[in-house]
Length: 180
Ligand code: 2AM
Image 1 (cartoon, rainbow, N blue to C red):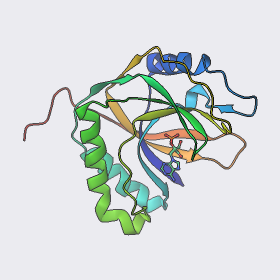
Image 2: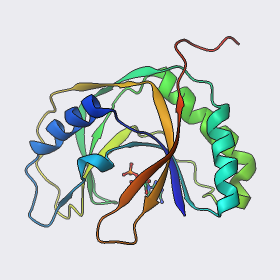
Image 3: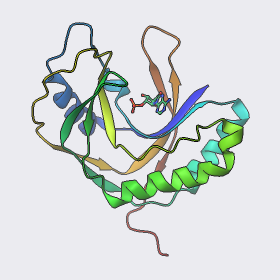
């Protein structure tokens, strides 16, 4: 089983992301991400055993971070992964907190989960299209907000022709900053 933690959009946010994706002019070989698969990855885990899913669920349950509004405000082309993404150039502090907390809580399980030692910085993004071989000309984005009130553990099945993502469990974000 291949798992990751992510923000999973509600219907309104999904529609906003779809609008941002629809205006892109990409080569015919590019593969637009299907709206039901839109997400903002918080932590990619990779292959895990069934018993490790419970550990990840415990970690998800233990998170204490407030909800936030994310301004998605630019397109980027990432040549190394051949994707076009919609990014939040300035992620809100609450999103950074959740990302940092998850990273810290995963640390003791890094060996067991076979997690990479590489600690890339947070790049808050939603992938809009894959297999984009040529750098496209990207227009300015009409910015939109993602009102994040929960986050999820998601199962990724990439065995078929199309990736299928299934939300395993979702946890609410807090209404306010947690007391120190
Ligand atoms: P992305 O589209 O947000 O970049 C599920 O597989 C998701 O995890 C993918 O959609 C991708 O998210 C991210 N992902 C996949 N492989 C990854 C890897 N090796 N390192 C980091 N993120 C990865």
